[in-house]
Image (cartoon, rainbow, N blue to C red; front, top):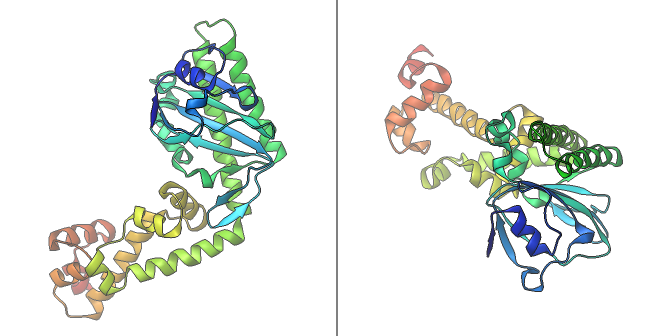
Length: 297
């Protein structure tokens, strides 16, 4: 495993020309000549990466299906994620925009970068672009390159960062379009999600395994946690955690009204280790304690 914390070191690893800016670079896949010892080697970077890949041989698994991405797919990596340097191919085209966190530190983008959850999606959950979308993205990237390649002045960083933010906002819009256009696939996903949630909330499963986590649900569905939550939010108005909590509250209400079990036992049946945790959770979600809800109803 190779750790890369600077743009200049990454250029050296790829056999690329020296960077024009210490904190940001745009790399053309066709101009890469990675050193032999680093080909097919896993590496961890200390910067953000946005990559557009297109060309023959760019098929990949997306969710539970296989799709041809020869027209181009956009992928996002955040600092600390693992990637692999591949040997460049004449049939593969595209670019890779890399920028260090120091570039956006202290800016409005730096304060909200975590809101762009697609940086934590799996590579199999890439953004598939139409020709028009690809043109929009590429034009912004070229503007970024032009800005950092010329003489740096007091306005350079603000202009570079604002263009990166525009790029990310367009990516968010295009991901929203992708969620919508994959409507039939998404309906199947929602059905499978609700079936899985029902299984998780069967009494014996709650007692044995506890309350299902977002991470567990996403893994069982075959998606990253952020991608599944974002997709569910688009389709249903609730993210994964909200669905889990809603199911928990509904089951608690049924047990409070439909049984004579003590509150402590109901909490245990729902996967809570301590009765006080159950009571606190129920009051947060309903505005009433379990005892008050049972009496009122």
